[in-house]
Every structure is written in structure tokens, then in C-alpha cells.
Length: 213
Image (tube, rainbow, N blue to C red):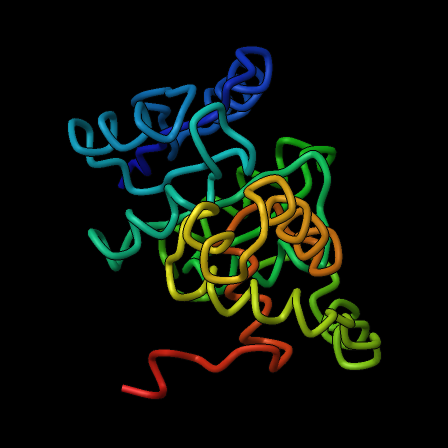
């Protein structure tokens, strides 16, 4: 059985390198390529690839956004996340999003091919390097310390409030609200609201709304 592959990366050279690696196999075929989250969703809707390999950073969002949407749509889809700058936090976000694998871009392309094969046949398992080490660092790492105001802002972010709404509720300017949000992101080692909420839940800074319902 041929494993169909969709490549999602905004760098053409990366896509070309991966495509050549898959062309050297007899059981894998790249059926489509995309350079953004939106293009990736459209291409997958059209081609229904067995495995999607996506960069973490894309022009219109995160590869994890793509993973979350596709995991909900296609539970048996292989989803491999690649990144130039792997970190423990991003690894755990990939797990939360439903990825099948999380790999650094500096790995040999043959390793990506091997992991893609595994993702095709076991999409709900998770593959990465040094997961045990990441878990050990997570357990031993000091918890991020947010000020009372920052914790309040984080709770408002979790509730879905905009910057303007946060500023209004706390009687601060939008600029000050943005400063608090930036500091929260830095302390939690995240880059957007969704990641901040997940990280806040994980370390006990905010309650999990799902568990409350």
C-alpha cells in the first residue's frame, strides 16, 4: 500500500528536500504541498493524504493549529510536526494537539521518512526523541511565577477576553494589558493565547474549564 504524504512548510527548499527523500522510497508518495495552515487544510480536503508533515511555524498560524483541526476531522490521520527550534514546551503542546510525532528539522530526512511510516500505521501513538528526558526536566523544573495581576490577566485570556476587554475590566490601558500578556507569554515560554491557556492549566495557574463542566 502506498502511503500518501502532504507536506506543509513555507520554505520551498525544505519541501523539496523532503519530497526527494520520499521519492527514494517505494511505499511513499508526496501527493500535495502547502505553504500555510489554510493551504494545508485545503490540500488535505482535496487529496486526503494518509500522513501530513507540517512545520511548526507557518505564515498564518502554528502547525499545531493545523494538527488540532485535522485530528478532529480525521482521527486516523498521521500528523508529524517538524520544527527548527524544538523545546520541551512545544513538544508537550504537540502531544496536547494530537500529533503523532514531533521532530527537529536537523534530523536526517530518512528519519523523517521512517517516522512518517510509523505515523501512517499508528497515528494515535506519539514519537519523539528523548521524551523521557523532557518529562524528567518538566517534573524537576521550577513552576513559573506570575504576579497576582498576571494571573488575573491569564484567567481573562482563558475566558476569551480581548485586550480591550482585559484593559477595561482591570482599569488599565490597552498598552499595559499587552505588556502583561507579553510577560505572561515569556514566563510560560509560549507564543500565543491558546498555548498560554494550556500551559497555565498544566502548571495549575488556572483551572481546566473542561473539568468544571
